[in-house]
Image (cartoon, rainbow, N blue to C red; front, side, top):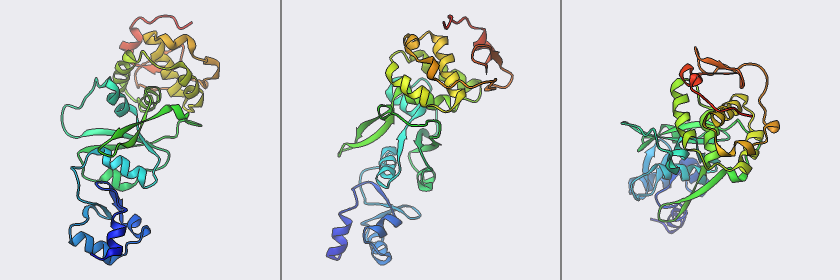
Length: 259
């Protein structure tokens, strides 16, 4: 291997994924890339996506690789909650799902590659400005690569954005039942920044349902609750206070007064 090629190869992090386009940007030309593939210095993961031989791939390798390639992405929603010990609905079989949130679109290779888990992509469009405290980082691997995760508070709002039916309601209900340590200060930043009326109403509905301790600390006047009714569950019961349709069985259960 030529010395210049070896020097450039050293720029590729061990074990992480890199695209053909990125290889070209750091100085590789097509003949050099083909040589590295033939010689086993690089292995092909998918069309136009490679890595240096290394430890078995884990989903964190894919996420951190995407971050290194310039994508602003974090682990959120149900995946972030489960990683924090809220794993009440672990998959019974098949691929584990990892929910990733990004301001733009995730690269197609991230969601189509064959991997140990299924990557579920979400576009994060429900907030005006996301507070810095809403994202935390956790180390992964030998090099302590920092993987961004949603905080509990943000992850719950992300989860609520995907509530569409009774099954989703039941799942969210279990998470809220365990959400007893939320930070009012962060909630009072996140809820006013949330543009989705249905998400804000759902959050307050679940908060009221479980009579969570941070209830009295919320600045309700700053939260956008919009006007009119919102149908969330077809055939559900209208909650008159928050003007959303909820599963009939859950609506019939006794809940404490909100005010």
